[in-house]
Image 1: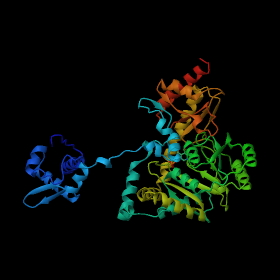
Image 2: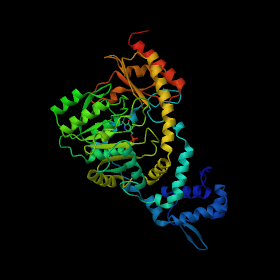
Image 3: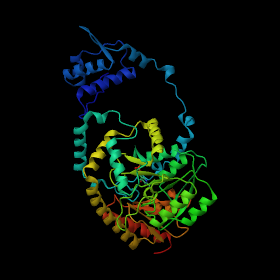
Image 4: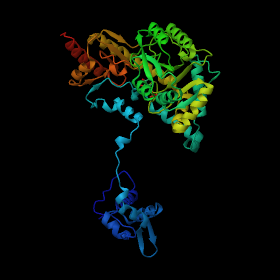
Length: 488
Ligand SMILES: Cc1ncc(COP(=O)(O)O)c(C=O)c1O
């Protein structure tokens, strides 16, 4: 015993000794009532100072793993060691796979991240639509953190409010008002990103009809969550200026829906921005059929050209038919899991209870850091820089696609990705096999479709790929696509 102790440089020595002895006790290698070696002897055996062993013994005593008898020595606590030696019948096993809920089984089946291609650094990957962390500007983030900690200190580490950190709520209400939203009868709930906000809203809506309407294609995580909540999903075809109004009208006349999920700006995956005219018409049609809208505003700020288009929540005026879910995951930092739900005051009051039941509240540290960053005017400065860089990259990617890829349709008015469609019958999964063999990957579009279609589409995320690799990767995709299409 004591000959397999290995010291590492990353933690205090006494803690390593303590953890080592605790491990021996928990495994039953040291028995209850057994005397531990004298501190000088153990220090020699482990090759550490006596002071470290004394500190380790004291820490073991504090945790109830050992006790000292004055003048005699330190002993292993009886109870713990007995339990370790007597695991017998308590150490039974069960079949967890047979105990999983339908929700858990479906969540696993629909978890594309688990089945995605694990690409090494050498692979040119167009699969991500996360922001480029090289743009983040750590000085401003660090300053915001230190300033807010200095201002509020310990309070930020205690429990906060389920609805969210109040200064951030006030800031976001103003932010939404500046987007033209009438917030007079509305309220706002802070969530852990868009994804939790969407999950909370979906869980609060009664499934009278059991059906939800959305664009086809749409955000895969949203499809997953709508399915997990038991909704039957009906997708509406996308045109270059947003969903088809004819298809929307026809679908609404045919069937009733509990709600609609729409991404009107820089839609994922198509990058399409719904025109103002369509926003008005869609709201009119949905209102006439009594279908409330969950609006996903995740990418709104990543506009590179054209005029600002008001969110559906602004089009709704003083009406309460839109629940807007916002997120800073694309325009700022996705690692700070902060999003928000803006909607009818009474509805938000209920959503606050759902949020409290689920997670009590979103991390106050995250919220307060974000608030400090926003309130000191960093967002505008950051957006100017990020927009300029993403616009440059967007145009570069667009040029490369035009030069190399024999697509039949390309969409993407802004944001961090482009969406390509090939002729009917072309398979982008086959194309992916061919490009993977040459070290290039992208996201096949079929996973965004609600009706099993989209086998001839793909999404190219460019935000985290360097210029040269964008050109090289797109050249390879183009060559392989041309070959599969029977070209050169
Ligand atoms: C359509 C859409 N909405 C929202 C988000 C952001 O989700 P979250 O805030 O949970 O990171 C994404 C991220 O890719 C998205 O594609």
